[in-house]
Image (tube, helix red, strand yellow):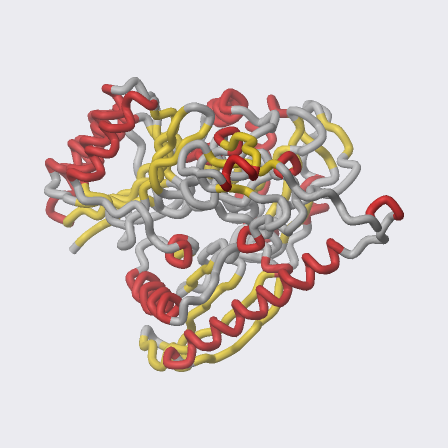
Length: 493
């Protein structure tokens, strides 16, 4: 009785004015909640007898949409993480918007545009995956994942920023015009694809090394958090449903406080950046008015579930419950749940559902396979089958064992990384630490002799050597919010 209308927000960037108009149109069609999808889309479920009302309103607003099919998957970008989870990079807000504006067509294949030094946005879930070079400003690596396959190919050239749009369009045309060769074909050849691309018209540079995919470190992406003398707000909904009345007021508050954009993420959440200190109370008031919980457990936030998948959501709820009961540490792990054969899910550990009996539309006896990505990095895509054909009753225990395998791998990696010859200078005992750093927001202390092993910061790591993305383990305050304090002064408090 319902149809899903998908509205693409290119790169996950949303104008609050446009979103407000869409929500008004949805209200006229008697819609009360909306969802955000894995590819940074707005998904609106509309009763069949209200479809014409809603689509008619969208037509009047000149807002493109798709009705019940997915011929134009959205362009996904890591823009929502820029400035809050990504810093010290040449890939700025302006560069993102230049690239996205230049792609003035709706690609028929999935396109991803990502910074190389982040793991908030999946890098290789697209078919045409652009990854910013970490050493050559305004140049991009390109990895092709042929549609409906796991076959990948990395181009041996770096492409200049200004030519991304044109190369994307030409590659899309080659792939779609030669579907038998490049779509749903495990023998698809990257060399054949690029032999059909005329390369003389572009600024290219030979890639000296393959792209170095960053290690996975998914940040805590909800709540009202400080950064760069501003605040950002992340909102996650357990059931993926956002109340239209709430989103309308959110859009109005954005406009009233002169925020020209908000973002949706591949985690089906939204992020509002650039909130001023003076406006913080207004945002807290909005959250209180709609009684929104802002502090879900990380082992719940770190799941990716397919769009329009009630089965997947139910399985997620089942597994999260058991992880919580067992108090299982899941920091650093991204879980995926997959119930469809050709769907794309980003994960370190994947729970894949299949049926022992599946014929003529009859599906009986569900079982679950657990797969681990290579090095537990979701961007790597290849890995191992950890456990096969698990009934639901033993799935939580098998998942717990897969998590144990992750921690064993992480411990071995840290141990190997720390093994180095001890120089004569280090044989003498270091002087006692006289100074520590204290968060000026919540007074949490970072002590270099203790570190933060729970956040993979080893004892002996001095504050100056922490990543610029480091945040307070209690309140999330930025590294800049920490001030040096004498230990003696702390002891007198």
